[in-house]
Amino acid sequence: MTATSRDRVLARVRRALADAPDVPEVSRDYLVSHTPDAPDTVLDLLHENLADYRAVVHRATDAELPALIGRLLAEHGADRVAVPPGLPSAWLATTDAERLPDDGPLSPYELDTVDAVITGCALAIAETGTIVLDGGPRQGRRALTLVPDLHVCVVRAADQIVASVPQALPRLDPVRPLTWISGPSATSDIELDRVEGVHGPRSLHVVVVVG
Image (cartoon, rainbow, N blue to C red):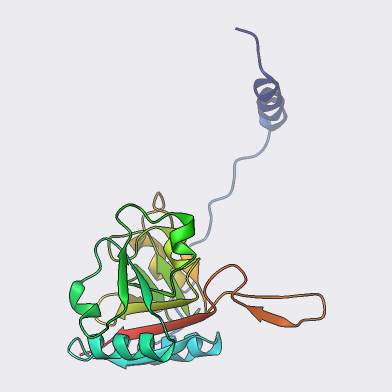
C-alpha cells in the first residue's frame, strides 16, 4: 500500500523522537480547590461569580420553581419556548407560553422564532462562575441554548455544584458535547465596546434550586 502524506509525516516525527528522553512524571500535588468545603460557601461563590459575568441569579425551592420560571418568561415577553425532550413538565406549569418540544428536532427556521429556552445543566462550577451543559435529556442539543435570546438554566444546589474545575472534570463524560457557559454571550471589538447576544443568548438567568 502506498504511503500517504500523513504516514510520511508521522514516520518523520517518530524518527525525530526516537532518542528523546522519557517524559517526566507530572506532579499532581496541586490544590484541587481554593474554596472551603462548605456547601453554603460554594453556593455563595457561584452566585457571586455568575453575577460578575452578568448572569442574573435566582434562588428558589422546588415548589417555587414553576412560578419563578413563569414570571421570568412573562417579564421577557417570551411567547414561544423551546423545550428539551426530558424537561420536567412541572417546570412550565404556570406559563401560558407556547411550548415547542425539540423532539423533531426543531429546524433552524423554527429555532429562530423561539423567544426562550428552559434547561437543566450537568454541573455548575463556583470558582469560575461556569455552567456546564452536556446534552442530557433536560438540556437538549447545543443549538437550543445558542439561538434563543433568553436562556433560563436550572441548577440543583444539592448535587450539581462543585467548587472547582478539577472537581468537575471527573464527573463529566469527555465524549459528550460539553458546552461551558460563563454569563450571556458577549464579545468586544478592538475599541472594547461590549456587544451581547452575538453568538448565543443575550440574557442568561440561572435558577439555583435550594432546600
